[in-house]
Image 1 (cartoon, one colour):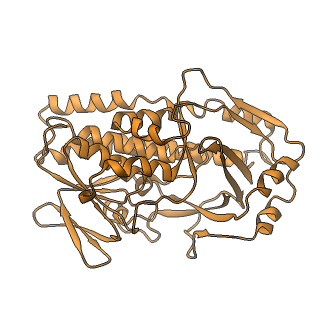
Image 2 (tube, rainbow, N blue to C red; image 1 turned 90 degrees about the vertical axis):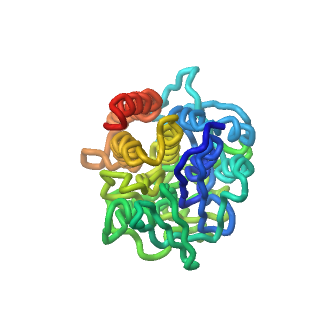
Image 3 (cartoon, helix red, strand yellow; image 1 turned 180 degrees about the horizontal axis):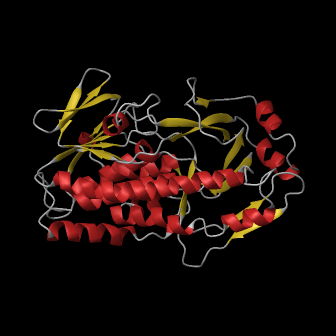
Length: 395
């Protein structure tokens, strides 16, 4: 363990990104307390697919081996991507070729949490703490107030509180919809369908999305997640699709419907004072590149590298956080834009009347993952840190 730091950290939110960040920071001697709104650590949703960039971020955080120890199977692998049409006879569109050295991981979200929760001393975890406000104190620290009228003060607040983030308003300022938009797309879980196996190939993760326009509008005021919707509703949405899709959907015994939302407009900054956003709090995006969680892990990795640098301390913390705010918004915003572009391709909203032809789709899908998977984040962080401390703690 590295020498302890002279600043304290509060992490608001105990999801995948919050726990990965907390585990890494605590191991490095940074006092980090996690405040979770639920009565225990829990993850909604089912499986998540992690590309090479996400795997490298987890490795850089020092938690990859912990996660792999609980994964089934406990090894890294990438499955090829195959695209076929949903209607008719399921015409083949495209195979996204993978090289032999590409690494990835498909994992059940609760398994990910189960791998990390035991690694954190219970004294650093606090439950039933739903944040309602973040404020700056006269001394330059920050205080987080919770719904039960309790509060906590720290030098640094990390907002990992998800798409409905409270910390986002402090960083980004007031917004009529909390910088959120409804994508006019609903996903039946549990008009494209994405499937991949998880939990030792015993469980098939299914995301069946129905889009009316794939345009952004104000967030829905009713519930975003409806459990146990009638199966007929789902089948009606796919009534003119082919036999294979209907067979897959028939195995969803208790479908739920998720209303897809994203951060919009994109945030220009993820830092204000000493409050910093990570994951969906900063850049919740549509899932069509499977890249949202990976961007959250990249956030956590960059913060970890910055906060645990031997020369980082309370006197230069603001400058160090400016490095994070220089690196992360452009990168995550690019991934969000490409995810939305892929979503339009998936749903057939191409540039021509009636959508893309198969050839146009093939051309636009080719190479779309490379900028996401192969950015050298480790090198980028190192360059900024070296420049910062070489100039006496100035950017």
